[in-house]
Image 1 (tube, helix red, strand yellow):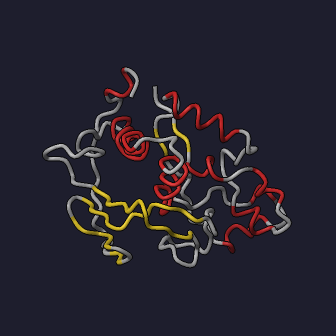
Image 2 (cartoon, rainbow, N blue to C red):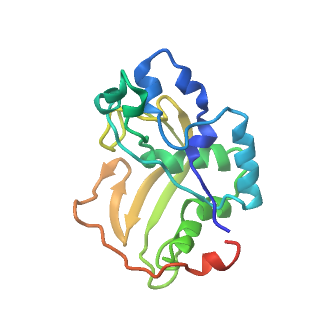
Length: 208
C-alpha cells in the first residue's frame, strides 16, 4: 500500500484562505487545499500506522504576480505552491524533534519509500553498493528561520514564511557530487539524468 502526504499539511491549516490579504490567501491555493487544523492529527496517525508512507510537495513556484492573475476570478489563480526546498527541514522539525518519527521512519518517508514506489530502489533511497550516492548531512542542533528572502527556489513566496525549525541540512551530495556545502549552492544546470524504470515495482506487491 502506498500513500503520500505533504509536510505542509502537517504545518499549515485552512485559516490561510481567510486572510484579509489577497496575496497571502492566493499563494496557498493548491489541490488538495489545506484543511482544518484538526486534520493534522489524523495525518500523523496515518503516518504512524503506515497508511501514509511517503512525503512529497505540491511544488509549483508561482510568483505573487502570477497568483494575482486570479484577483477578480478565483478560478484563474494558478494552482500550486512552492515548498520543496525546505520540506525536509519541516518534516524533521515536526516529526523527529517531537518524537513522532524515528530516524529510520524519517528516512523512509523522505526517500526510501518513494524510491521503492517508483521502482528506483536500491539505486535511489539507499546506501547500497553501486547506488547513486545521493546523501544529505543534517545538523540536528542547527536552527533556521524559513523565508522567501533566503530560499534558492525561483519565487518570491514561501509557504513556510517565518517558521523556525531545528535541524538543518548542511551538506548534500547528488550522485557523489558535492552540490550543497553549508550555504554554498554548487548545483550545475544540466547535471540531472533521466532514469528509465519499469512500472509497478515491488512496493505494489505489499506494504512498504
